Image (tube, rainbow, N blue to C red; front, side, top):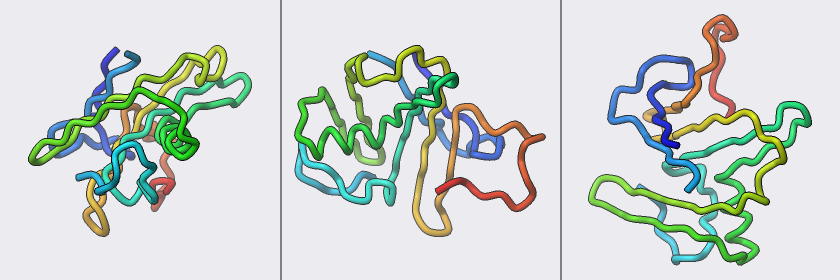
Length: 136
């Protein structure tokens, strides 16, 4: 399955090439195989898998940090190009909540005032409150 994040957090179209997330199947400098501290301060893609009956969910970005910190073996591949990077993670099915029935993905680009928050499935317009900001 392939998903493309085409909207900002509040439902507007992104103004650049959309982020693509494939399931299942400028980054901070760091030592390969080691956890990156404060990963959320950089370009980030997060995926959430939810069992809405139990409230259990898997947040993939945090799982990758946790697995890296515990030095568990996880198939992960990063390709760095001149202006972008690509990451692929292969997660065992036993890390997912049983009967996961909802999914969403987020991309965060830039820093400071230029930071952009994007989402695969935006918050419905009728649920947006005036002045609401992304949940950081």
